[in-house]
Image (cartoon, rainbow, N blue to C red; front, top):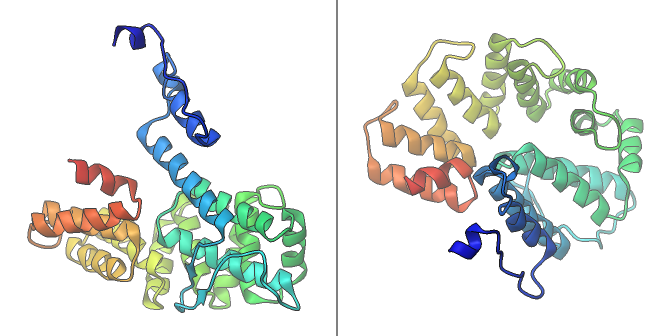
Length: 287
């Protein structure tokens, strides 16, 4: 113990992946402010896990119609491989939202998939830009501008494209547009519009919108607080597999929000969300 306090550290085991070494050596920094917090460590570990899955070509993705891309691999054959890639990228982004991945992971997933397909970001961006007549490409183009993939970050253009796609009834763009209004991305904050768009998208079955609509009712965002409605929406989204909603449902059962307290159901919800990597659920399960 004294040796550790004096700065002695173990030597990394042979063949330990460099990314893992980087994580735990950062945790050894003498200055506490230089050490990653728990959420950052977990995010980095998740990212390594995702990268490994991408390299092995075994991430399965479901889009909103529950159609599956059998396997992300480098041997997809199509007359227009750029169109295939854009379809996969959009499904990948939608799936990563439903699984509660943070922004860093979502960006990395997109970048890794482009590399996996032996493409570069500019090429995919330009193809998407040249084919804006395809509705889903408008939404994907907004994602590229929002995250700076193949182009510079431009949140105003991202907002405008989400708005264009939403007007054409692209359901995920209704949700994304609501998110922009709620958080002031490319536009001024407008919680009432955010609530209205979440409600419209939720009514069309967009599960992230269902969860966020629950947040609106719980926190009084763009509407009056209503814990019963919040609980019902969290439950609906959780049943559809929205990971954040599963944790939120656990909170409702734990604290009696919109329903009676039920510690067993709270534990089960936290456990389910934690097994999917939801960081708050992991903390709640520990408590």
